[in-house]
Each structure stands twice: as structure tokens, then as C-alpha cells.
Image 1 (cartoon, rainbow, N blue to C red):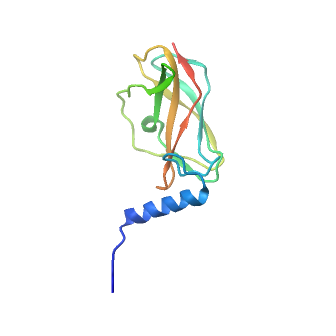
Image 2 (image 1 turned 30 degrees about the vertical axis):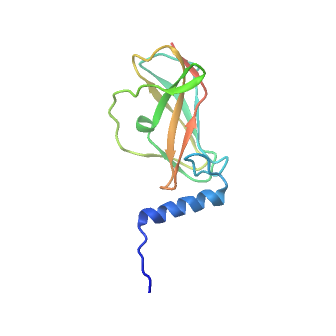
Amino acid sequence: MNLFVVSPRFTRSIVAIAACVLSAGCEGNSFAPIGEAPLVDVLATKATAGSLIPVRLENPGSSAWNYNLCLDATLQRLVDDAWMPAPPPLRLCTLEMHTLPAGGSLESGVYVPLGYEAGTYRVAVEFSRNKLGSATALSGAFAVE
């Protein structure tokens, strides 16, 4: 008789892969079905270093997503036609996760750190969903003056 033990980590991986394959939405690290990934929109065209850029988070899907804008929102700068990660700011963040419910939206802000160079930026927000994977939402561009 052959007996083996399957670890919980292995089981979660298999469940995530199955969910991805069944939903036909496997792209990169996103396990969201096509059209169900969250969205982030900047609500201003300009910001200054040391201020907040207002954003709207939207969830067009039927499942809730988790996020923490302090930890999971980053800025990317356009350099020579390529988006490059901007240096992460020194900040203190709580580990509290917030939930963006299915079909929900909310407005908030993302900090543009002091010392950032003038240029074209965008916001990237990493969302997670019940340990089944994650999705990164990218905003449109805005100017830092």
C-alpha cells in the first residue's frame, strides 16, 4: 500500500491552478477571470511631490479583492518610453488589509513622496484574493510637477 501526505501549500497551489485554468484568465500572476480584475484610475492630471494623488479603485467582478494602499500601491515613472519603478518612500504602514467588495468602488489617495523628480508617473496597486492569487492594476498617467 502506497501512502503519501499532501502539504496544505501544495493543495493551495493545485486549487489556484485549477481556478486559473477553469476561468480561462491566466495572465502573469493574475488568477482573475478576464474582465474581473480590479481597476485603478487617477482622478487628477497633476500632482506635486509631497501630496496625494486622488485615485478611484473599482471592482467590476463578482469576487471581493483585498488591498492596502500604503503597502501595495507603488508609483512607476516613464523613462525613455519604459515604465520604471519609482524609489519606494520611507513610510510606516499598518498591515491591515481592506476589502474592495464585488461590484464596489471607492475613492482614496496615493502619496507622491517628497523628492520625486518632475515627470510622468502612474500608480500600480497589487490586489489579492483569498490566497488564490493576485492582480496588479495600473492607472493612467499623470504629471508630477
